[in-house]
Length: 181
Image 1 (cartoon, rainbow, N blue to C red):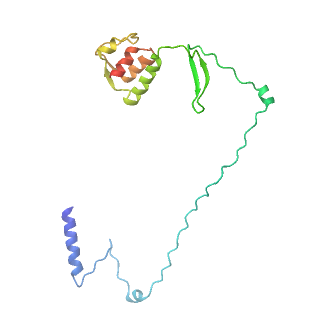
Image 2: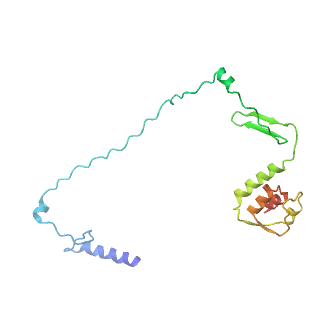
Image 3: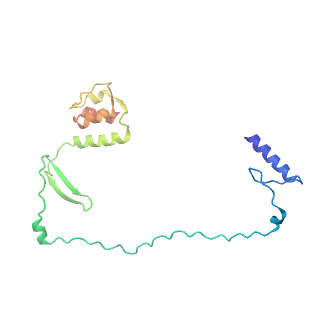
């Protein structure tokens, strides 16, 4: 490639200096124009500017939206639904926008956070490792109680299998293996 460029540029410079040669940028033979045609001035139309689409105007005020007004009469005929029956030992529903607790059940009672910790472990594991990643179970994971999954030291399991054992069977041993792996 470099040789072609070098020879091409050398040939080009020689042609520029030769008195009977002229360089023509064409890929096929183009006949020279007749002298009478070449002497005539050519009329070229002036370039015209292509109109570009105009941008829509930015509204300075948002459009008004009609909102139905809930009258006292309507509210009487459409009562607010009762809170659902929650069978869990504790529950809380929070409106994060308003910073307001909407519902709470047994808010003063303290419980172990094992299931919440397992959910967070599952989320982190799913973010960090592909589900087909193989993890070798460390000895420490087999010592955790309760060991619902029943894994053994040195056993090779995928992240998917450990997640299933941790979330479906509440296996603390699977959670420990994921956290350590």
